[in-house]
Length: 67
Image (cartoon, rainbow, N blue to C red; front, side):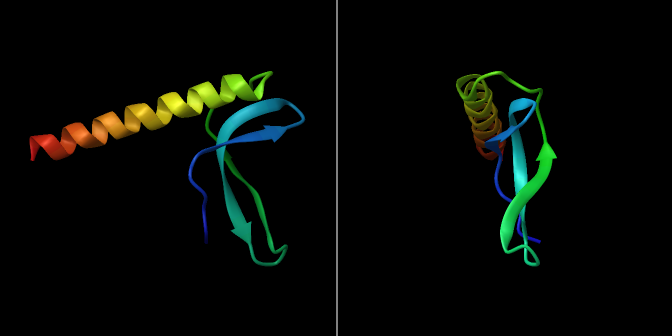
């Protein structure tokens, strides 16, 4: 199964950070997970996504530096 990286997604409830998966039967990307609360604006959800990526990158670099 193909699963996307974290991204800003939209539903009727609002914007959120989540992942999609590729469905061969539908030949399209469909929602896979919601990993945040809902936000009223895309900008708010993007801010969270940027923070997640920054934290992940810093933690990964720290692990590499320790070894």
